[in-house]
Length: 338
Image (cartoon, rainbow, N blue to C red; front, side):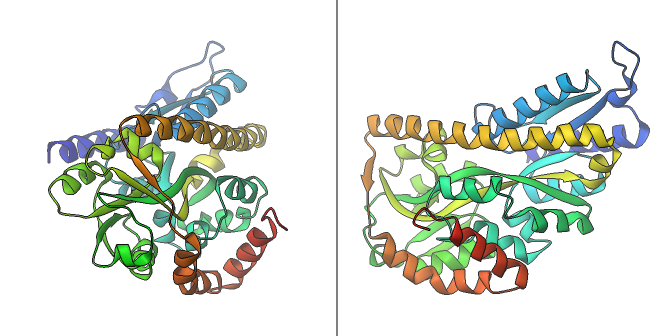
């Protein structure tokens, strides 16, 4: 409760600052130009690859514009839950946020294709789709909601972890599994044999410890960072989703830039994407080694069984519009064997 109250007060301060002009935009560079502050909401810690990529983007943009832009990142979810942060981006109280794909999906259901189950072969496959511009038209179309999706940062391959090995769908029968607050995740979990339950990632440790849930699903990085290996020793590679987090920005902020500043910004966004993917992949290997040293047992179920079970969901998402059909076909073309 106290954390939520603090988040609300901080957001109120940001809104008031925006409305009254009491932000760093009233400061000046050494040459007398106004400084525009870019405020970014983020729900993970300062060591996370996404934070590091965004920090790098901000520092390089500040340097490239001779200090006319300065980025401030609010990590650890201090500004509240991510759906609310998207609303503050839409109103211009925040300039940017990094949110799960389910957040823009709440405005436009076509965004479900970006994070559909068993769509990507691996993280590299997702990266080829993102940097190759497969989602560009969809991302730009979000402007009608007063934000634009700029890119995808990977949140890694999500797998199930629990206190028993998962070798088949039968092992998930009757299991309550913590998943993202997303209709796609809930339906996917049901198809895989379990029952999805939504809660904050910070609540997962206690929920596993007390038996409120039987399992959870996330990347090795989150599994390690939140020390979930202490209460769930089996990490099973179901590989059900390569999870995309979407970088969104206020159209008000984007449209306030000069043409030259926007060109610099767009290039740095692309550079930050490549940096984030590379950094995340390195961190995954480190996390795997760290949890293995803590006694984690890795399990390798038959992924094809789960892929087949989830095919109706992937088919429905990919065929829900001409937009999703094209995106799906473009992603399939980017598979290595093609």
